[in-house]
Image (cartoon, rainbow, N blue to C red; front, side, top):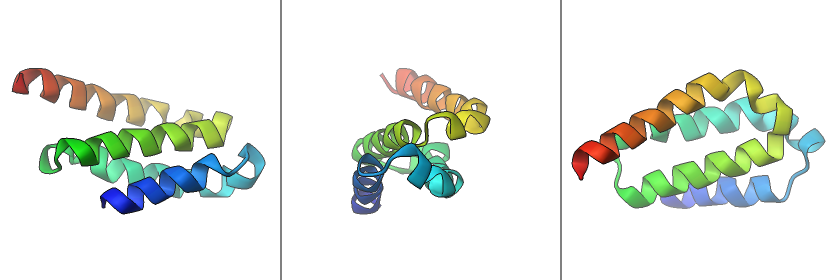
Length: 86
């Protein structure tokens, strides 16, 4: 999982918005699977998920806007869970 998220990050970093637009929905879904189930993954997977998601948002620019509520809810859940662990 760690390597696939890293590969997604690298893929996104080498794309421009117009080229990446067709991949936005699938790339966000891939990131969201690990973010929605963050309690089952260790911190390195969570870190790679967030890094990949950031790369997806940068590459997709405005085409990621329809997914922002879902993304923000998942990130809030991680923050909330993380603060309870400490």
